[in-house]
Image (cartoon, rainbow over all chains, first blue to last red; front, top):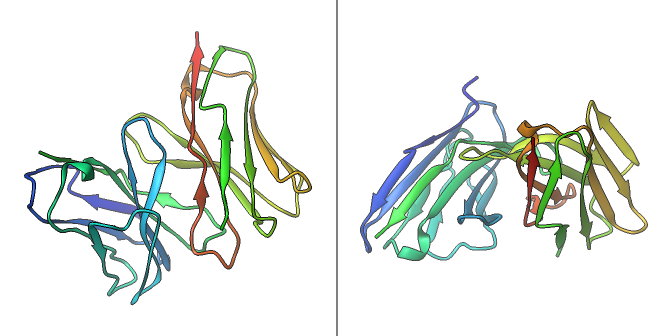
Amino acid sequence: NAGVTQTPKFRILKIGQSMTLQCAQDMNHNYMYWYRQDPGMGLKLIYYSVGAGITDKGEVPNGYNVSRSTTEDFPLRLELAAPSQTSVYFCASTFSAVYEQYFGPGTRLTVT
Amino acid sequence: GENVEQHPSTLSVQEGDSAVIKCTYSDSASNYFPWYKQELGKGPQLIIDIRSNVGEKKDQRIAVTLNKTAKHFSLHITETQPEDSAVYFCAASKVSQGNLIFGKGTKLSVKP
């Protein structure tokens, strides 16, 4: 099993550009999450999904969009990138809300 | 909704000493309490978890205690080693909740 994979590992965007952060898992987990982590700070939930076709907002959803067309993939879309979106983005997946979450290696995004 | 408070935010100990990190939660219906370790440049990884039907759980040098009445739980690391240096996050959840609620993290430094 590859677990949770994220691409790209690093990305530099100009203000106003858009991009999609990819996340995939091969553990057949229903639940998937996107978090952002600013330097020296904790994890903030952006969006999550409890199954294909179902998504819900987390703590900081503004400026982001998600879709979940398959169990395996959960891409995060940034529209009109802003410097405030400079962060490390982690994707995670789990069997249920009361079981271990498996985190990907992260995507380090800089918006200048 | 659930709120998780974590203390201290930083903790420095000498190698071989014990370290204790404490968390409190607000929702008495929460029944799953994991602890995650995040090493520099990596995603968080589960190190131990406890459910509400258990008061204590141990795994080698790591233990977690849960006091449901007081709504707090603690991580205990004994005989600390330099490789224990990392950021530790506590979290809380329940079956009906789609996501974990994380504390803000504790940066543990173990000095040789």
